[in-house]
Length: 153
Ligand SMILES: [Zn+2]
Image (cartoon, protein in one colour):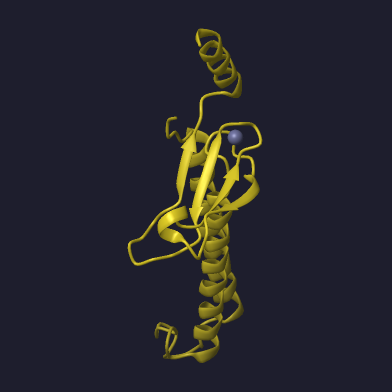
């Protein structure tokens, strides 16, 4: 078992973050067009905090963009680190009533192409147990390795 991340996984994450940043920039430009500065002496006066429609519109834009960023990160978390496909077959293991004996409950997700598993803890403690990706060699290498080990026995 080996923990691996492909470059495509990181490129997809950076691309999502750039798209979300671009959407935020476009929304800020749209707000600036929809709420132009007042004419006259207050033309250069900062509008953020002094003009409530402008401030409210920017607040809505930032909150919506934060939601998009969280959605992108959530989607990225449940993707295979190698082939970027969505992880499937969530299986809950462990027992809430016997954490010490049976292990803390967690949910296991599987890449259907056999690249690895993602273990996400279901119990969130102050100790900060994190999700763990366990990557595998290719499916065929694992089968050949298992067969050779079976022949050697
Ligand atoms: Zn995969």
